[in-house]
Length: 197
Image (cartoon, rainbow, N blue to C red):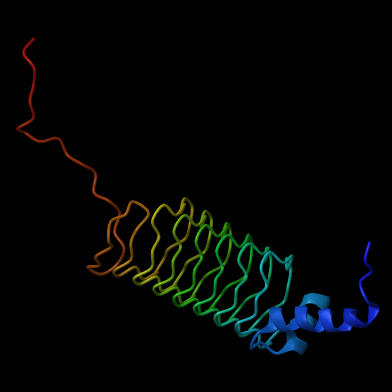
């Protein structure tokens, strides 16, 4: 059995940090992983797949084009965080605070956003296909041209949310004529076929 040379351990550690960081600030990546407290940090293009980051404080952090696929950010504070073009597929955001977050063109495929606060968030052109938005607060959120196909939205608060051009859970494109309107109740046609008795 070959032994791993001890002299290579610092090199391997440095490589791991560099891989996680890519163009992110390596000190900020280390701070996040060690403490979970990193408000305003530069984590752009960081590769943080499947990390346990529940309760993290990332208020105002820059996560542009970061890869957090499969990570747990439940109850995290991501207020005003910039996550444009980020890979957030299958991320757990349960009860997370995403107020005012910038998620333009973010990939939120299958993300769990139950009871998350997305009020005022920018979700334009984001992919939310199959996402769980039950009980989420989307008050004033911008979801223009977002993909919501097969998203679960029961109990979501959508007051003043913008959906122009969005692909809705049923696959239809939302066409605004002002505010979001509920589906009309179908009325029986006077020309319906009635079988003879």
